[in-house]
Image 1: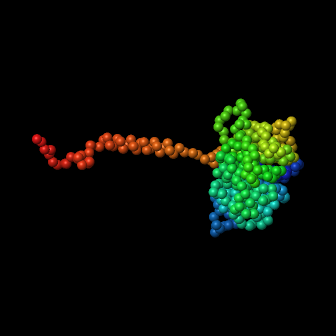
Image 2: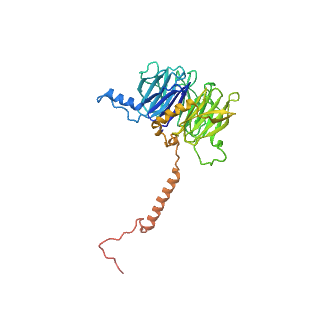
Image 3: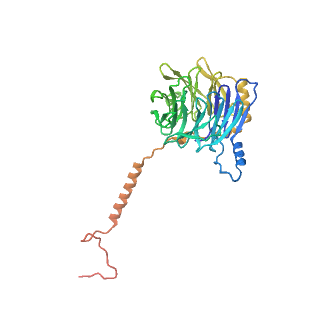
Length: 411
């Protein structure tokens, strides 16, 4: 999957990533002008210098960041890049703790609730765990699928590891014994792009898929509680052009029980209200943007931050006003962060115009039978034509052949 710009928020710490770089700052005050920046390519150059000519060859890659996440408390931040590295940071203050090699390029990662491990899912279907307390420790294989993994999550009590794959499955495994499967959440008809365990309701899981649905599950039993078809939520004036809705981000606002859903390459954010008593999702609104939206994230005290493909306005802050979400005028904090992003726009330029990162995951079907029958008919037709052109058979069943060099007898 192609790497695109991303946004991560934990508390009042905001991270914007693009290409091989990320930028971190605080949204607490406009007076705090401190920023932390990191470039994975700088680390690659440093590694090459340390290895020297006799060191083992490094994985080829551009250093582009593929996935990133905060720990629950925000004390740690981790990312993986396409050079097959897992890079771990401490955030208070920002410091790179370790750079470790992973077996294959990773698609998703998450911290355990205890913040003792980082779980990394890769494109071959495996999940490895890496210690946070021992930043230089090797990874340990925890579980595997027979399909490419697209997301990984853990339950709030660290009892279960949840994995989503390209073959429409969500697996719920025991963390202490990952070979022991508690349940499967089955129902999606395309790849499962995102899964999200609701922090305020630890027994509930949200999932999205290339089949254009957002679903709510009771994941321990695998029971589906609600299914929302995104194609049915389009505005009447909007033409139906067979869009594919694969969510690239699921965000949850604990304060109001609000779910924000962003679909790949669709400049719209869908809002749902969680009815915890009835265990249902209620569609409330969709908010359209003029530019492609790269990522969204909730900040509990501010609202919804939106990262979009616009150098003039890279960040938008949205809040509910009279029950309807809308963008708010630029404030001091928003202006501070936006100014820095404009100055560092080069790190986001590579994400502009990038094709949908999930488009290659849709399965293509082929009508092999029609092609087979057509070729069979062509072969039969050729055989009939040959039989028509060949001479008739003789008395013994063989075709007559003229003997060369002898004259024909006449009466």
